[in-house]
Image 1 (spheres, rainbow over the protein chains, first blue to last red):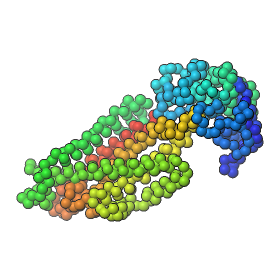
Image 2: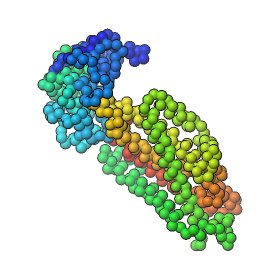
Image 3: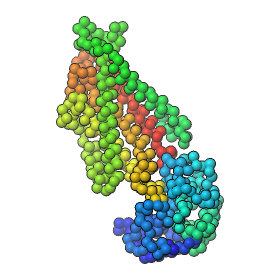
Image 4: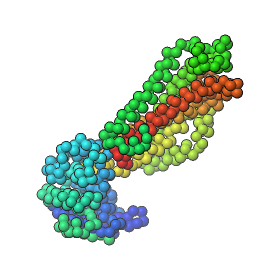
Length: 199
Length: 283
């Protein structure tokens, strides 16, 4: 349902992506790998509509993605690498979770977001807890595709496994396409239906 | 409070939370006290008295009298009140200019460039020379001083606000809020404003002592408050002639008063800025 065809992207004169294709079906878990600088994050941002490609088409169910300023929560969401930077340090966890509307109770439960955290500030959560909050808030009712950009890179092995187990079970269950961007081939092999490697 | 204490404060601000409050109450109390005392002071205390010229501090005049027989304590108080009033006005105007320019810079590339050049220009000129030029151009006196301080003290704060606004606008959490369907005005209200407010408050508190010092400076060289009015700058300027006669008290009282008011606000501003930074000081 999410498809990217012939994607080119350049930062100034530096071409990062050249003629890249990628597709992601509902409920599918796809890995995106490649060495540092190969354009993994750039492709993730392009797919989420945070950047516009220099050339190529990105479609959701055959229709172009809504622009960068949607009036309602966008169907494709992007979770950046560092959860500490992805949340406003002044906000409480409850407010962060409410940002896209009432948070999905299934997603909250599946990701293990505790109600006790609601009055805390991001700084009062651990890295793993914050990663889960930062993901859970993206599960609004119209979510179709979730792009996770190295979201577990800062976590220890146990926390990494717990989070990815819960996340993949949740997206498969809710028929949400999941793109896991990771340089870790073993991790991709374990959780993804298939993997694509850039560069 | 030392930098170490500020760094070690807990996320709830239990430790840093009380100190700035007390300091703030202290600084605000000092200002109110000066304003109230100056307003309540009987007018004759400021009068010239030919019978008590150049008296050293004593029972009749706690801080002595000057070469015209005016009570130094009463005159210092009135001068500090004048300074505080001018300082508040000028600091408010300066902060408003900084806020408008800082926000304007976040609007677009051209606006940002214009604000950047303007800021560099004002910062590039020698500070006091610019003050003198503006004060002179706007006709000296109290109005001139207010204009001069207001028009020269915004660049540093404007630069801080501009940087803060750009950092927030480019942050992942703003991008996420956009992707979750939030409008630009909503983001300005809920992301930008909470980040800018502490900077604006601290900026104002830090501009205030500068405004007071520069009011004194301009009055000292004769471009500020009219010489017959009580003003710290005028008093210090007058005291130059009396110091050679050994009348140290004529300079000591206004000098110390100025330093105490300016320093207490400077310290208060520093602590306030540290205490209201986002939890853990993340950018």
